[in-house]
Amino acid sequence: MEKTHTTSVRIRILGIISLFFFISGCTVDENSVYLKIRNHADLVKVINTHEHQHQPEEYGDYTFRFYHLIAASYLAADVSSAGANGYDWKMIDSLSLDELWKIYGKALNYTRTSSYYSQFVKGFKQLYSFNDLYFTKSNIEVLSKQIEENYKNYNEWFDKAFHRAGYELMFIDQYWKPFNTEIDERYFALAFNINALVSASSRRPEKGSEPGGFYKEASRDGFTINNLDDYLKFCDHLLRKNIDKKAVCLKNSQAYSRTLFYEDVPYEEARALFDKPSSQRTSEEAKKIEDFMFHWIIQKSVEYSLPVQIHTGYLAGNGNILDNGQPIKLNNLFLKYPKAKFCLFHGGFPWTGEYAALGKMFPNVFLDLVWLPQISREEAVNALEVMLDCVPYNKFFWGGDCGLIEESVGSVSFAKDVVSEVLAKRIKRGLLTEDAALEIVNRIFRENAVEVFDLEKRLGKEF
Image (cartoon, rainbow, N blue to C red; front, side, top):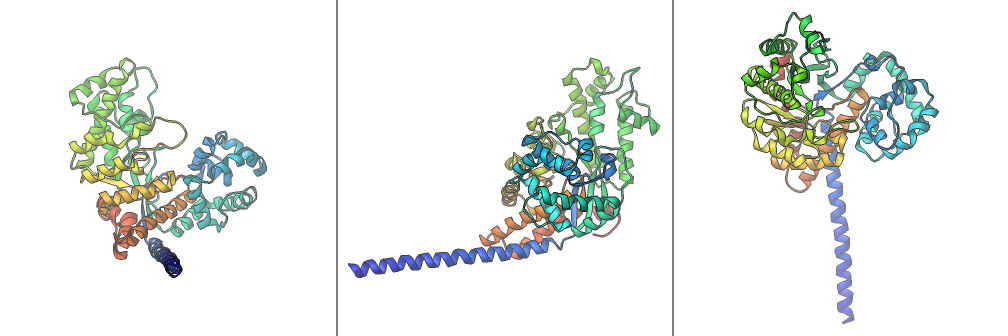
């Protein structure tokens, strides 16, 4: 009896030891595969399908330091959510670092677990030799001096950071100046933000009132708008103007101001509503004109072979109507326009499953992971797993969606981490080979964008 018991104990011990070595072996193997994929990702010349890069002076006449970069970043929203007052640019330009830490330090510390914080740190690790896990009162002083020095010649600093991050091209959406077509083609390709074309259709100035920006732009370009046909002619002029400047896509971010459900409104009804004075239209009538306009723009996107990028899901900043951006609200458009190319943004978070399902159902719906890792790294991991389960991987893109280069560098590093982690796990589970994983990395960060946006033809160079 005693011998049997001893044997049983030995078997258990041997089993535990074997399990330990098996688990250890799995970890080592998975880490090794992860590093191979991650290192390969750093060799890819990235096509970044969505950015909002600004020149520092576009924020105002400030001496840029650490807190200015936070104020221009997504992290500012988390700091506000943690209880700090919003970032007042004039105030942070005038106060000392000690005073700013007293105002923001506590709330900033509360955000240390958020993905906004982590990807912000990533950018400083890569560009500033920053080796700490968190920002502190003391290391912010060092960073501020470095930032101030770099921003004395931002164009030179941008070029250095752009290439250090491995970028080849960024699609730039200038929503704050949508009629500008002059960009630096060494770094950028135009993404024409069409929000103004849609929203101005329901806000035609009445006699005696000051025309808004859209109507001023029409006048500058020699267009008089008296009716819907005049309006459409000017909109077509803007589309062709952007195409002449090698625009690679259109962009709709209207979820920030309205629902993404665009009903199919007949031309005759829209024309009659357009003629009606704005002050006499109901909100439902104004929406109908806008709905008609986006349908018209989609038809033009087919004519001009321009993919349409659409913001779905979560809305940046603090406070808004979340369900404006629910991806399923676009379903009618995907059915009506099978020849259009729709690129959905942000994983549709928090409707990531719905977002993946639309990419699976429709050959003309593509999925862009843009910004999702910054919103929630773990949700990006889960969403990419689901996307790979559901959707062919020639339909995925990635973009940074940032305002200044430090955050953009952090965002691409963060995204590469997410993609590499997911692919390494799938290899470990026997669902993927290493060769296929490396191909998927190439596809997400470069090749899919080259193909779907027809970059070689539109930009006139090889990729």
